[in-house]
Length: 223
Picture 1: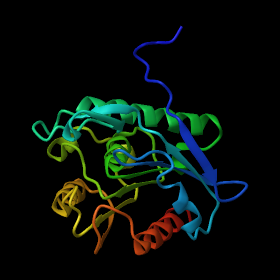
Picture 2: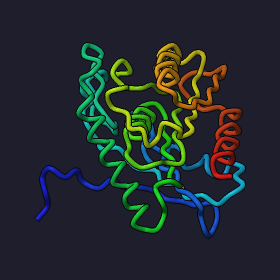
Picture 3: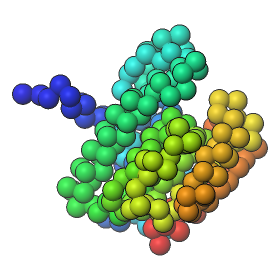
């Protein structure tokens, strides 16, 4: 019998850049996108090592900021109540933690798993990565922020305090102002996290230089 409290397993798209991947990157899309969003970037990454990429689909849910329209999202966004998505964020983080557990069951150590995400997906990558109780390889947070950054110290686990974190943002992002990302970065720096920071002359998107920087960062942490 299915446990009604247990979230349904996420649908995923998987690809790998070589026959024997030495690591797994779980990469979460942004609001309204789906698992196919970042899959085309994989061939553009000039990687030194073979890696497996897992792209999960967020559940379909009504999004308050979009008039209650249903779309794929890791959490609801209500501009009148910034912390209203906390429960959704925690549930989504647990669902991604299940994907890590599946990788471990299949022989990939958690210490070789990197969490990555864009926008909403980056919020989940940071939420789970900072609180995860096993050492991860890295956390990649693109065009995003730390949810409830004021209280992040209450949620972190020391297992990943030395885990490399890549944060990147567009200078003219109209969806998530870069100031919000900078505030998040400073909170993490204050807690002793290692942040590699990049900013680009772009909006809420990914640019060619960022793709090159992502590949360079992955090559560094999977050296």
